[in-house]
Length: 480
Image 1 (cartoon, rainbow, N blue to C red):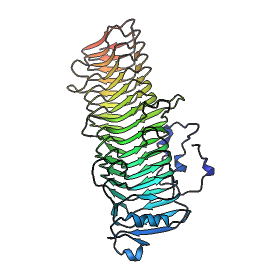
Image 2: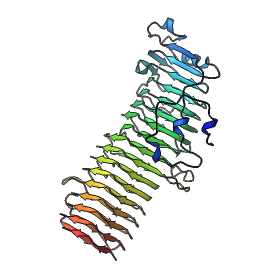
Image 3: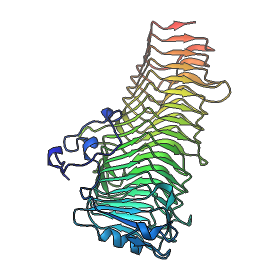
Image 4: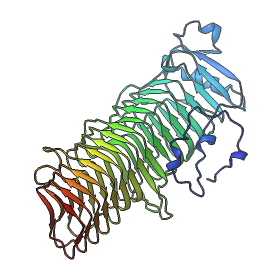
């Protein structure tokens, strides 16, 4: 799918959502340059509006082109949509309660379906989806309240589903208790904006992009609130995803976790890259799962991913877990009260973990496991005297890692400020401050070869420095 130049697009009234402050961190790919501010779906060029009333709408006759009777109300709504001219237009649903027996289907490009906010309620029958956009562009769904039955998971019962669509917007909708995904961007979509929605109680993910074997590009999920979904994640991208943004959302951790981007190892030739998770608040949850997860993100062409500026509190599992991924960064996040390690980098390479603030988490501050050429710098890690483990732990076949400029304080009981262990060769530990730990810097065994320990400040630890490594070089460390 080739990029469209801005000059080639029809003139649109732009969305009120601006990405000026959050997009600079996203790399611009050669084929998928980020023109979000100009290309998201706008107001259709046609001024034609069809008005639909529910059977309980007050003064409906004087205001409506179509009046519903409370039974299979999608019939009148779909009739209004199909009555719009070829240039598109708007179907406006007056406040009231609409009962759907099947889906509302957007039939063409340049169509907006809009309600009066939470007073326009679409009640879904069992196993029924709400609104479908399939194969059409420049469409908008906004200001609607969609409620399912809260029943068991059913494959097509999404609140809103988009597939093979471009330049579309879903905004300011309330979606509750649907039987599949709350909002699902399924396949073949690009330039999709999902913003300002409140999604709760979905049987699967509250907001989902893709599934295995699908591709979606330039998807922006911004400023939504998700909670209490009954399976999987609050927000998930699970496909070949390129140049996607998850930003400024509030997410309660679901059964599998809060926010996730992953691509299946079943199809390793299809990469997911240039994706950003930024400025979100992730909290709570009932299962032992993680705040933010990155799985299987790699790219032979050098694309990168970023997890930046998120606040993660009181999640039952890890704060951030990076698994089997390359060339990404975990920067400037705040984590406290996590039930497991705050940040885990596992089976990954060339990861930067920098400038994070980690407070009173139940296990390790930063855990590097079977990962090489990682940089852990300028993090501020404070453990509890009674809860927690090592502040920074580099473990099992994690060579050529740099641990520099970190503050590591108060690892409890028998735990260390910085611990290097088990076949971690050629690591550099420099310019860190370690205070109040069992051991400030600990090279645990002789399988760790040629470690450099340089210019660290090791104060008020039970033991400042323990070295059992091979060919370790230590100089200019301050011990007090």
